[in-house]
Length: 203
Image (tube, rainbow, N blue to C red; front, side):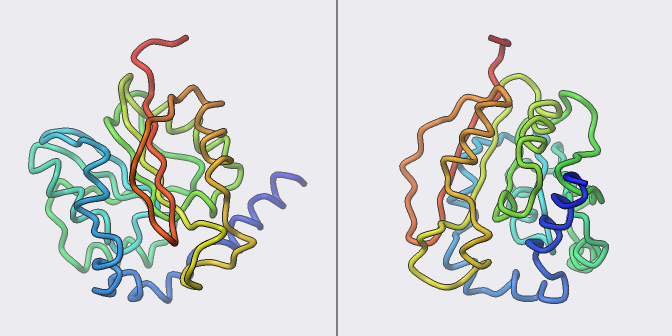
C-alpha cells in the first residue's frame, strides 16, 4: 500500500507532457544557461551521461555537444510523448532515448560517467531509491548534478511549493547512498544546484 501511495504521489508531481512546448521556451534557455550549469559535471568527449527526465531535450542537446560523437547521452523519460518530442527535434545519433520510470534506471551497473537531473528530484518517490540506482549505474568517480526548485523561490514559476524539496533532503539522500557532496558557488533566487561524486573506493 505504501509503495502504491508513493507512486501516486510521484505521478501527481510529474510534469504534464501536454505542456512540453513550455520546456523549450527561449526564455528558459536565457534563465538557466545550460552550458554554464552543465559545466559542473566536467564532462569530457567520449563519456557517457544520463539525462534524467529528459523531456523534449532542453538539457539533452547541450549534453550531447559536451560528450561529442564518441560519447553517449542516455535520454531517459517515462513519457512516450516526451521521447517522441525529443526525436522530432532530430538529436545526434549518440543520443539514445530510454523509456524508464524513475527511480528505476534501466542501465547496467557502472556504465555511466555522469548523471544530470534538472527539476526532477521533487517528482521521484522514493528519493532514496533513485540515489541508490544512481550509485549503481555510475562508475567509481562518477559525477551527479541535481538542479531543482527552491521552496522559497522568488518567482511563482515551477511546481506548487508544497511539492518542492529542500536541498538538505536531496543532499541527505545522496549521502545515504554513498555519495560525497561537492561544493558549488552557483546561486539562484528560484533554484538550487547540488553536485555529488561517487567515490573511487567504497568506505
